[in-house]
Length: 441
Image 1 (cartoon, rainbow, N blue to C red):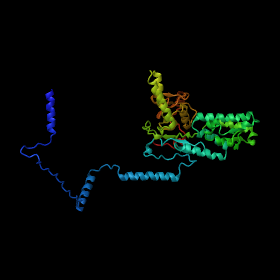
Image 2: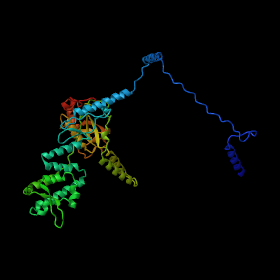
Image 3: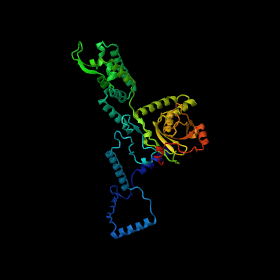
Image 4: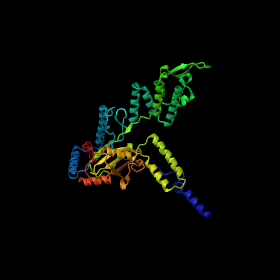
Protein backbone atom coordinates (compact mmCIF):
# COMPACT_ATOMS: atom_id res chain seq x y z
CA UNK A 1 0.00 0.00 0.00
CA UNK A 2 2.89 2.39 0.84
CA UNK A 3 4.53 1.68 -2.50
CA UNK A 4 1.21 2.37 -4.26
CA UNK A 5 0.97 5.89 -2.75
CA UNK A 6 4.63 6.60 -3.60
CA UNK A 7 3.98 5.77 -7.27
CA UNK A 8 0.94 8.10 -7.32
CA UNK A 9 3.00 10.98 -5.81
CA UNK A 10 5.79 10.45 -8.35
CA UNK A 11 3.33 10.47 -11.21
CA UNK A 12 1.83 13.76 -9.97
CA UNK A 13 5.28 15.39 -9.67
CA UNK A 14 6.21 14.22 -13.16
CA UNK A 15 3.09 15.74 -14.68
CA UNK A 16 3.58 19.04 -12.86
CA UNK A 17 7.22 19.44 -13.95
CA UNK A 18 6.29 21.19 -17.18
CA UNK A 19 7.06 20.38 -20.82
CA UNK A 20 9.87 17.95 -21.44
CA UNK A 21 13.27 18.64 -23.08
CA UNK A 22 15.61 16.64 -25.27
CA UNK A 23 18.89 15.56 -23.70
CA UNK A 24 20.89 17.04 -26.62
CA UNK A 25 19.54 20.54 -25.91
CA UNK A 26 21.30 22.82 -23.53
CA UNK A 27 19.53 23.89 -20.44
CA UNK A 28 19.62 27.56 -21.45
CA UNK A 29 18.03 26.95 -24.84
CA UNK A 30 14.31 27.20 -24.87
CA UNK A 31 11.81 26.45 -27.52
CA UNK A 32 10.71 29.58 -29.31
CA UNK A 33 7.36 30.75 -28.16
CA UNK A 34 4.65 30.79 -30.74
CA UNK A 35 3.16 34.19 -31.26
CA UNK A 36 -0.56 34.30 -30.88
CA UNK A 37 -2.20 34.45 -34.23
CA UNK A 38 -3.70 37.82 -35.00
CA UNK A 39 -7.47 37.69 -35.53
CA UNK A 40 -8.41 38.56 -39.07
CA UNK A 41 -9.59 42.10 -39.53
CA UNK A 42 -13.33 42.05 -40.10
CA UNK A 43 -14.47 44.01 -43.04
CA UNK A 44 -17.42 46.32 -42.38
CA UNK A 45 -20.64 44.76 -43.55
CA UNK A 46 -22.27 46.54 -46.41
CA UNK A 47 -26.03 47.02 -46.43
CA UNK A 48 -28.18 45.54 -49.17
CA UNK A 49 -28.53 47.47 -52.35
CA UNK A 50 -31.76 49.20 -53.35
CA UNK A 51 -32.55 46.45 -55.82
CA UNK A 52 -32.12 43.78 -53.10
CA UNK A 53 -34.36 45.68 -50.69
CA UNK A 54 -37.11 46.03 -53.30
CA UNK A 55 -36.90 42.33 -54.14
CA UNK A 56 -37.09 41.35 -50.46
CA UNK A 57 -40.12 43.58 -49.91
CA UNK A 58 -41.93 42.08 -52.89
CA UNK A 59 -41.18 38.55 -51.71
CA UNK A 60 -42.41 39.35 -48.22
CA UNK A 61 -45.66 40.80 -49.61
CA UNK A 62 -46.27 37.69 -51.71
CA UNK A 63 -45.61 35.49 -48.67
CA UNK A 64 -48.08 37.43 -46.48
CA UNK A 65 -50.78 37.20 -49.16
CA UNK A 66 -50.36 33.44 -49.40
CA UNK A 67 -50.05 32.77 -45.67
CA UNK A 68 -51.45 35.58 -43.47
CA UNK A 69 -50.12 35.63 -39.95
CA UNK A 70 -51.92 36.62 -36.78
CA UNK A 71 -50.74 40.09 -35.77
CA UNK A 72 -49.49 40.13 -32.19
CA UNK A 73 -49.11 43.10 -29.94
CA UNK A 74 -46.47 45.58 -31.09
CA UNK A 75 -44.73 48.46 -29.44
CA UNK A 76 -47.05 50.84 -31.30
CA UNK A 77 -50.06 49.04 -29.83
CA UNK A 78 -48.68 49.43 -26.33
CA UNK A 79 -48.09 53.14 -26.97
CA UNK A 80 -51.67 53.56 -28.22
CA UNK A 81 -53.02 51.74 -25.17
CA UNK A 82 -50.98 53.96 -22.88
CA UNK A 83 -52.23 57.08 -24.66
CA UNK A 84 -55.84 55.91 -24.38
CA UNK A 85 -55.33 55.22 -20.69
CA UNK A 86 -53.92 58.71 -20.09
CA UNK A 87 -56.71 60.33 -22.08
CA UNK A 88 -59.33 58.50 -20.02
CA UNK A 89 -57.63 59.66 -16.83
CA UNK A 90 -57.54 63.27 -18.05
CA UNK A 91 -61.19 63.11 -19.08
CA UNK A 92 -62.14 61.76 -15.68
CA UNK A 93 -60.30 64.62 -13.97
CA UNK A 94 -61.75 67.32 -16.20
CA UNK A 95 -65.28 65.92 -16.01
CA UNK A 96 -64.99 65.41 -12.21
CA UNK A 97 -67.33 62.40 -12.07
CA UNK A 98 -66.60 61.97 -8.35
CA UNK A 99 -67.82 65.37 -7.21
CA UNK A 100 -69.98 65.45 -4.05
CA UNK A 101 -73.63 64.99 -4.83
CA UNK A 102 -73.02 62.67 -7.77
CA UNK A 103 -74.61 59.30 -7.13
CA UNK A 104 -73.11 57.45 -10.09
CA UNK A 105 -70.16 55.15 -9.65
CA UNK A 106 -66.93 56.39 -11.33
CA UNK A 107 -65.53 54.44 -14.22
CA UNK A 108 -63.01 51.77 -13.27
CA UNK A 109 -59.39 52.70 -13.92
CA UNK A 110 -57.78 49.28 -14.12
CA UNK A 111 -57.01 47.58 -17.42
CA UNK A 112 -59.37 44.82 -18.50
CA UNK A 113 -62.07 45.91 -16.08
CA UNK A 114 -64.71 45.67 -18.81
CA UNK A 115 -64.86 41.92 -18.12
CA UNK A 116 -65.25 42.26 -14.37
CA UNK A 117 -68.50 41.19 -12.78
CA UNK A 118 -68.47 44.47 -10.86
CA UNK A 119 -66.07 47.42 -11.37
CA UNK A 120 -65.08 47.58 -7.71
CA UNK A 121 -66.32 48.21 -4.20
CA UNK A 122 -68.17 51.52 -3.76
CA UNK A 123 -69.81 53.31 -0.86
CA UNK A 124 -72.55 55.90 -0.40
CA UNK A 125 -71.69 59.06 1.51
CA UNK A 126 -74.19 59.48 4.39
CA UNK A 127 -74.17 63.29 4.02
CA UNK A 128 -74.26 63.91 0.27
CA UNK A 129 -75.40 60.57 -1.16
CA UNK A 130 -72.39 60.55 -3.50
CA UNK A 131 -70.97 57.21 -4.66
CA UNK A 132 -67.37 56.96 -3.46
CA UNK A 133 -64.52 54.61 -4.11
CA UNK A 134 -63.03 52.67 -1.25
CA UNK A 135 -60.02 54.98 -1.04
CA UNK A 136 -62.21 58.12 -0.99
CA UNK A 137 -64.75 57.39 1.73
CA UNK A 138 -62.73 58.46 4.79
CA UNK A 139 -61.50 61.71 3.23
CA UNK A 140 -65.00 62.70 2.03
CA UNK A 141 -66.60 61.95 5.40
CA UNK A 142 -63.91 63.95 7.19
CA UNK A 143 -64.48 66.87 4.83
CA UNK A 144 -68.26 66.75 5.38
CA UNK A 145 -67.89 66.64 9.19
CA UNK A 146 -65.50 69.61 9.21
CA UNK A 147 -67.93 71.60 7.06
CA UNK A 148 -70.70 70.81 9.57
CA UNK A 149 -68.90 72.84 12.27
CA UNK A 150 -70.28 76.06 10.78
CA UNK A 151 -73.89 74.98 11.37
CA UNK A 152 -73.82 72.75 14.47
CA UNK A 153 -70.45 72.69 16.26
CA UNK A 154 -71.67 70.42 19.09
CA UNK A 155 -72.91 67.69 16.73
CA UNK A 156 -69.84 68.08 14.49
CA UNK A 157 -67.43 67.72 17.42
CA UNK A 158 -69.28 64.62 18.66
CA UNK A 159 -69.09 63.06 15.18
CA UNK A 160 -65.39 63.94 15.04
CA UNK A 161 -64.70 62.22 18.37
CA UNK A 162 -66.45 58.98 17.39
CA UNK A 163 -65.35 58.91 13.73
CA UNK A 164 -61.79 60.21 13.58
CA UNK A 165 -60.48 58.09 16.47
CA UNK A 166 -60.23 54.42 15.44
CA UNK A 167 -59.48 52.90 18.86
CA UNK A 168 -63.00 52.24 20.17
CA UNK A 169 -61.84 51.33 23.68
CA UNK A 170 -59.95 54.58 24.04
CA UNK A 171 -62.92 56.54 22.69
CA UNK A 172 -65.24 54.93 25.23
CA UNK A 173 -62.84 55.70 28.09
CA UNK A 174 -62.55 59.35 27.01
CA UNK A 175 -66.29 59.78 26.49
CA UNK A 176 -67.06 58.28 29.90
CA UNK A 177 -64.55 60.65 31.53
CA UNK A 178 -66.14 63.69 29.85
CA UNK A 179 -69.56 62.49 30.99
CA UNK A 180 -68.20 62.26 34.54
CA UNK A 181 -67.04 65.88 34.37
CA UNK A 182 -70.49 67.00 33.20
CA UNK A 183 -72.25 64.91 35.87
CA UNK A 184 -70.21 66.59 38.60
CA UNK A 185 -71.23 70.01 37.27
CA UNK A 186 -74.89 68.98 37.07
CA UNK A 187 -74.93 67.48 40.60
CA UNK A 188 -72.87 70.24 42.22
CA UNK A 189 -73.62 73.47 40.35
CA UNK A 190 -72.57 75.61 43.31
CA UNK A 191 -69.10 74.00 43.56
CA UNK A 192 -66.62 76.12 41.61
CA UNK A 193 -63.94 73.41 41.50
CA UNK A 194 -66.12 71.20 39.26
CA UNK A 195 -66.43 73.96 36.67
CA UNK A 196 -62.67 74.03 36.11
CA UNK A 197 -60.71 71.31 34.31
CA UNK A 198 -56.94 71.45 34.42
CA UNK A 199 -55.56 70.79 30.95
CA UNK A 200 -52.25 69.37 32.24
CA UNK A 201 -54.04 67.01 34.58
CA UNK A 202 -52.76 63.44 34.13
CA UNK A 203 -56.22 61.92 33.65
CA UNK A 204 -57.20 64.64 31.18
CA UNK A 205 -54.01 64.19 29.18
CA UNK A 206 -54.20 60.37 29.03
CA UNK A 207 -57.92 59.99 28.35
CA UNK A 208 -59.19 63.16 26.66
CA UNK A 209 -56.38 65.30 25.25
CA UNK A 210 -55.21 62.45 22.98
CA UNK A 211 -58.60 62.21 21.20
CA UNK A 212 -59.46 64.28 18.14
CA UNK A 213 -62.52 66.50 18.59
CA UNK A 214 -62.55 66.70 22.39
CA UNK A 215 -61.24 70.27 22.54
CA UNK A 216 -63.82 71.39 19.98
CA UNK A 217 -66.53 69.68 22.07
CA UNK A 218 -65.56 71.54 25.27
CA UNK A 219 -65.56 74.87 23.47
CA UNK A 220 -68.89 74.11 21.72
CA UNK A 221 -70.76 73.38 24.99
CA UNK A 222 -69.52 76.54 26.72
CA UNK A 223 -66.05 75.93 28.15
CA UNK A 224 -63.37 78.57 27.67
CA UNK A 225 -59.63 78.02 27.85
CA UNK A 226 -58.02 80.49 30.31
CA UNK A 227 -54.80 80.81 32.31
CA UNK A 228 -55.28 80.70 36.09
CA UNK A 229 -52.73 81.12 38.90
CA UNK A 230 -51.84 78.11 41.03
CA UNK A 231 -51.09 78.47 44.74
CA UNK A 232 -47.42 77.86 45.61
CA UNK A 233 -46.48 77.92 41.91
CA UNK A 234 -44.76 80.66 39.95
CA UNK A 235 -46.48 80.50 36.57
CA UNK A 236 -50.19 80.09 35.73
CA UNK A 237 -51.75 76.89 34.35
CA UNK A 238 -54.18 76.37 31.50
CA UNK A 239 -57.76 75.44 32.45
CA UNK A 240 -61.11 74.81 30.77
CA UNK A 241 -63.61 76.93 32.67
CA UNK A 242 -67.37 76.68 32.12
CA UNK A 243 -68.97 80.03 31.28
CA UNK A 244 -71.80 81.50 33.34
CA UNK A 245 -74.16 81.37 30.36
CA UNK A 246 -73.62 77.61 29.95
CA UNK A 247 -73.93 77.06 33.71
CA UNK A 248 -77.34 78.75 33.65
CA UNK A 249 -78.61 76.05 31.21
CA UNK A 250 -77.97 72.69 32.93
CA UNK A 251 -80.53 70.97 30.67
CA UNK A 252 -78.34 71.75 27.64
CA UNK A 253 -75.29 70.22 29.29
CA UNK A 254 -77.27 67.09 30.12
CA UNK A 255 -78.55 66.86 26.55
CA UNK A 256 -75.05 67.26 25.12
CA UNK A 257 -73.79 64.54 27.43
CA UNK A 258 -76.48 62.11 26.25
CA UNK A 259 -75.65 62.92 22.62
CA UNK A 260 -71.99 62.21 23.28
CA UNK A 261 -72.69 58.88 24.99
CA UNK A 262 -75.19 57.59 22.39
CA UNK A 263 -73.32 58.68 19.25
CA UNK A 264 -71.84 56.20 16.79
CA UNK A 265 -69.06 56.55 14.20
CA UNK A 266 -70.17 58.00 10.87
CA UNK A 267 -69.55 55.37 8.23
CA UNK A 268 -70.23 55.28 4.52
CA UNK A 269 -72.74 52.57 3.62
CA UNK A 270 -71.82 49.86 1.17
CA UNK A 271 -73.35 50.49 -2.26
CA UNK A 272 -75.17 47.37 -3.44
CA UNK A 273 -74.57 48.22 -7.13
CA UNK A 274 -77.74 46.35 -8.06
CA UNK A 275 -77.72 45.03 -11.62
CA UNK A 276 -80.03 42.72 -13.58
CA UNK A 277 -78.71 40.45 -16.33
CA UNK A 278 -80.43 38.43 -19.01
CA UNK A 279 -80.37 34.62 -18.72
CA UNK A 280 -76.82 33.46 -19.40
CA UNK A 281 -74.65 30.37 -19.12
CA UNK A 282 -71.99 32.60 -17.51
CA UNK A 283 -74.06 33.02 -14.36
CA UNK A 284 -71.68 30.99 -12.21
CA UNK A 285 -68.52 32.70 -13.50
CA UNK A 286 -67.28 35.60 -11.38
CA UNK A 287 -64.37 37.83 -12.37
CA UNK A 288 -63.87 39.96 -9.27
CA UNK A 289 -61.74 43.11 -8.84
CA UNK A 290 -58.87 43.36 -6.38
CA UNK A 291 -61.03 45.27 -3.88
CA UNK A 292 -62.77 42.02 -2.96
CA UNK A 293 -59.52 40.50 -1.76
CA UNK A 294 -57.65 43.44 -0.23
CA UNK A 295 -57.51 43.59 3.55
CA UNK A 296 -57.14 46.68 5.70
CA UNK A 297 -54.49 47.01 8.41
CA UNK A 298 -57.02 46.13 11.09
CA UNK A 299 -58.15 43.05 9.17
CA UNK A 300 -54.54 41.92 8.67
CA UNK A 301 -53.90 42.22 12.42
CA UNK A 302 -57.03 40.19 13.12
CA UNK A 303 -55.92 37.49 10.65
CA UNK A 304 -52.47 37.39 12.27
CA UNK A 305 -54.05 36.89 15.67
CA UNK A 306 -56.25 34.09 14.31
CA UNK A 307 -53.24 32.40 12.72
CA UNK A 308 -51.34 32.55 16.01
CA UNK A 309 -54.27 30.93 17.77
CA UNK A 310 -54.42 28.26 15.06
CA UNK A 311 -50.73 27.41 15.56
CA UNK A 312 -51.36 26.92 19.28
CA UNK A 313 -54.30 24.63 18.55
CA UNK A 314 -52.18 22.41 16.32
CA UNK A 315 -50.45 21.05 19.43
CA UNK A 316 -53.70 19.53 20.74
CA UNK A 317 -56.10 16.99 19.30
CA UNK A 318 -59.05 18.54 17.48
CA UNK A 319 -62.56 17.19 17.20
CA UNK A 320 -64.71 17.39 14.10
CA UNK A 321 -66.59 20.38 15.49
CA UNK A 322 -63.31 22.19 16.13
CA UNK A 323 -62.15 21.55 12.55
CA UNK A 324 -65.45 22.86 11.18
CA UNK A 325 -65.12 26.04 13.21
CA UNK A 326 -61.62 26.55 11.86
CA UNK A 327 -62.86 26.11 8.29
CA UNK A 328 -65.50 28.76 8.90
CA UNK A 329 -62.85 31.05 10.35
CA UNK A 330 -60.86 30.72 7.13
CA UNK A 331 -63.86 32.07 5.22
CA UNK A 332 -63.83 35.21 7.39
CA UNK A 333 -60.75 36.59 5.69
CA UNK A 334 -62.97 38.03 2.95
CA UNK A 335 -64.47 41.48 3.51
CA UNK A 336 -66.98 41.55 0.64
CA UNK A 337 -68.96 39.08 -1.43
CA UNK A 338 -70.76 39.32 -4.77
CA UNK A 339 -74.05 37.42 -4.89
CA UNK A 340 -76.31 36.57 -7.83
CA UNK A 341 -79.85 35.23 -7.58
CA UNK A 342 -81.31 33.31 -10.51
CA UNK A 343 -84.99 34.28 -10.82
CA UNK A 344 -87.79 32.03 -12.17
CA UNK A 345 -87.52 33.58 -15.67
CA UNK A 346 -83.76 32.97 -15.76
CA UNK A 347 -82.73 36.59 -15.18
CA UNK A 348 -79.95 37.27 -12.69
CA UNK A 349 -80.16 39.80 -9.87
CA UNK A 350 -76.71 40.86 -8.61
CA UNK A 351 -75.58 42.83 -5.57
CA UNK A 352 -72.52 43.50 -3.37
CA UNK A 353 -72.58 42.67 0.34
CA UNK A 354 -70.29 42.55 3.33
CA UNK A 355 -69.06 39.02 3.95
CA UNK A 356 -70.20 39.31 7.58
CA UNK A 357 -73.73 40.49 6.76
CA UNK A 358 -76.63 38.25 7.66
CA UNK A 359 -78.70 36.22 5.23
CA UNK A 360 -81.66 38.48 6.02
CA UNK A 361 -79.89 41.30 4.13
CA UNK A 362 -80.03 39.25 0.93
CA UNK A 363 -83.72 38.50 1.42
CA UNK A 364 -84.41 42.20 1.86
CA UNK A 365 -82.36 43.02 -1.24
CA UNK A 366 -84.34 40.56 -3.38
CA UNK A 367 -87.67 41.66 -1.91
CA UNK A 368 -86.99 45.31 -2.86
CA UNK A 369 -86.68 44.25 -6.51
CA UNK A 370 -89.95 42.28 -6.71
CA UNK A 371 -93.26 43.59 -7.97
CA UNK A 372 -95.11 41.76 -5.18
CA UNK A 373 -92.67 42.08 -2.29
CA UNK A 374 -95.14 40.59 0.21
CA UNK A 375 -95.18 37.10 -1.30
CA UNK A 376 -93.00 34.56 0.59
CA UNK A 377 -90.12 32.94 -1.25
CA UNK A 378 -86.99 30.89 -0.60
CA UNK A 379 -83.35 31.12 -1.64
CA UNK A 380 -81.35 27.99 -2.42
CA UNK A 381 -77.56 27.81 -2.41
CA UNK A 382 -75.49 25.37 -4.44
CA UNK A 383 -76.43 21.76 -3.71
CA UNK A 384 -80.01 22.71 -2.85
CA UNK A 385 -79.14 24.09 0.59
CA UNK A 386 -82.06 26.24 1.75
CA UNK A 387 -81.15 29.57 3.35
CA UNK A 388 -83.61 30.55 6.02
CA UNK A 389 -84.36 34.25 6.43
CA UNK A 390 -84.72 33.80 10.18
CA UNK A 391 -81.30 32.23 10.68
CA UNK A 392 -78.73 34.51 12.28
CA UNK A 393 -75.97 33.35 9.94
CA UNK A 394 -73.50 35.48 8.01
CA UNK A 395 -72.55 34.89 4.39
CA UNK A 396 -69.03 33.74 5.30
CA UNK A 397 -70.52 31.22 7.73
CA UNK A 398 -72.65 29.79 4.91
CA UNK A 399 -69.72 29.55 2.47
CA UNK A 400 -71.09 32.30 0.21
CA UNK A 401 -67.80 34.21 -0.16
CA UNK A 402 -66.23 35.78 -2.14
CA UNK A 403 -69.03 35.08 -4.64
CA UNK A 404 -71.96 32.74 -5.04
CA UNK A 405 -74.93 31.94 -7.27
CA UNK A 406 -78.27 31.28 -5.57
CA UNK A 407 -81.65 30.21 -6.91
CA UNK A 408 -84.97 31.92 -6.24
CA UNK A 409 -87.84 29.58 -5.39
CA UNK A 410 -91.44 30.35 -4.59
CA UNK A 411 -92.89 29.14 -1.35
CA UNK A 412 -94.86 25.91 -1.87
CA UNK A 413 -98.20 27.56 -1.04
CA UNK A 414 -97.50 30.50 -3.35
CA UNK A 415 -96.47 28.18 -6.17
CA UNK A 416 -99.72 26.23 -5.79
CA UNK A 417 -101.77 29.44 -5.94
CA UNK A 418 -99.90 30.57 -9.06
CA UNK A 419 -100.64 27.33 -10.87
CA UNK A 420 -104.26 27.36 -9.71
CA UNK A 421 -104.65 30.84 -11.22
CA UNK A 422 -103.56 29.46 -14.59
CA UNK A 423 -100.37 31.58 -14.81
CA UNK A 424 -96.87 30.38 -15.41
CA UNK A 425 -94.51 30.34 -12.40
CA UNK A 426 -91.54 31.33 -14.60
CA UNK A 427 -92.90 34.73 -15.65
CA UNK A 428 -90.98 37.91 -14.86
CA UNK A 429 -91.38 39.03 -11.24
CA UNK A 430 -89.12 42.09 -11.20
CA UNK A 431 -90.24 45.69 -11.11
CA UNK A 432 -90.65 47.27 -14.56
CA UNK A 433 -87.91 49.86 -13.99
CA UNK A 434 -85.42 47.07 -13.37
CA UNK A 435 -86.46 45.17 -16.48
CA UNK A 436 -85.97 48.28 -18.56
CA UNK A 437 -82.34 48.48 -17.38
CA UNK A 438 -81.53 44.80 -17.96
CA UNK A 439 -78.01 44.06 -19.18
CA UNK A 440 -76.15 41.30 -20.97
CA UNK A 441 -73.70 39.35 -18.84
